[in-house]
Length: 617
Ligand SMILES: O=C(O)CCC(=O)C(=O)O
Ligand SMILES: [Fe+2]
Figure 1 (cartoon, rainbow, N blue to C red):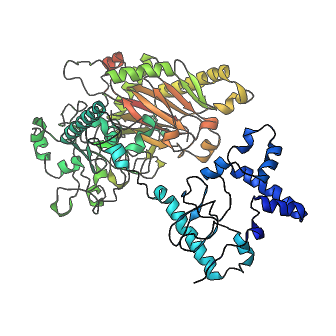
Figure 2: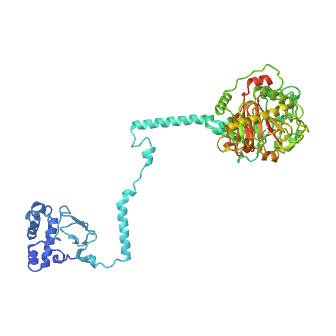
Figure 3: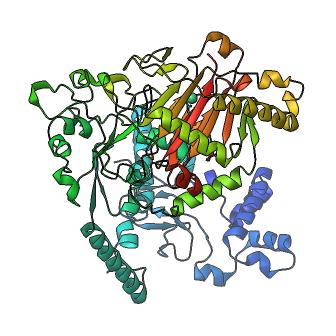
């Protein structure tokens, strides 16, 4: 064991004794310098000494010569560093504990061998007896050991910080034993929780399951208000401009086998109910209030796609007796007929169902007042378009241009022509699905299947009736009026344009007469099957609307959602020519019960809308 011996006081320490002072004063000038250091150190180590006198420096000098007895007795003063002291650092500042025996070593005892066990007691970073200078470079293992020690010490120091657990659960989520809540707060929270639980239970009991036949999905909702999908896509199909898209059948990725669409009309042909009709009796189901009416739609990208709907509605009054039924071939005797099944559609074109837009009046007519919806729509349209206007360069709306006599006359002529050869029929489009509008062409026949004009209609070989002179005159007058109106309204960039470029002369050789029942519509399209020359010159299309109002959309492309909407009312004339000749347009809906009642009284026009578009080939 290595024994340490305290170095001689003169080597390191200059103790404040008379003898040493004398020595240093007398013989060693450096010692004098040391003395003053020691004096200062004594002054610092002797609490309150300097503050007692006015002249601190003088006192310090005196102190260098001697110490007050009382303080020496009390042991507050370090008289001879290294001598044993049992104050346990109560009187003198602590040096440290002896790492061997644990003795508390105070400044009086100082660094050096422990007065109890002799082990060396040193302060952190001590320079005792020149230890630091003596210590050679530290070995790697010592450096590592020290670093490890420092780490452990640091861990110990910060352990309480690192190991504190913040119990969120108890602070925020537990109510019963939450130390942060008062009794009242706990009660209030528990009451709210109970209410929420009861409401949730009630909600779960009130489940509405909606079978969306159109979208081919089953939707669970708490109530109809919470099922916007249903309300927008089926009940009201969203705003007019989006209606077409909303109603489109979208592929259901979860359906492995595609459903078969039944054309109830064809199904009836196939023998389910047709016998009853032919025998003069209504199909059984018609008497029953619980008749299930399936509504579906065949979707094509063609504008003339149309909603089909099995109809025993007010339009037909259930009276099917005058209707000729065609007999499609049914494969495998099956009553089911898919719209994609071409066999169902063969021969269908051989017979034409006569469609009378003004059926003879059989009973006293009960005229119903317009629905609230129709009234609102009409009001809106009045507000929107009080007067005639130029909607786009070359697209002109003449509100109420046809007077009532004109309207009545047009309806009567169309009716007469419509029930004759080449009259109204319900065209089929690709795959045989029927358009939900009735059509008659005057002058030339426009064939929806080929989208081209023909002199005789291929469907039955009939020659289209000619355009009555009255109609020709009306078109010419209408174009004149449009030009006058346009000239007055021209502003901005069109100002310098010649009016005849905007509304060129047009001598109609074709009139397409459409009759839309209330579910009728016409997809976004361009009228572009006339001759290249006609289109190039922008010869206008003139359109007359009669009967129920309709929402007409138009725009620069096929996108219905970005299209503009106007309501065309009975008597309105719309002209699109010049720069608007190729405008996209369509009918999104017919607004029920909006036809002028006097027109109905005079013509017995069916519920629906009659539209005539005149074009030059
Ligand atoms: O019914 C209408 O207003 C438009 C008719 C139409 O665009 C057409 O027949 O090409
Ligand atoms: Fe058109």
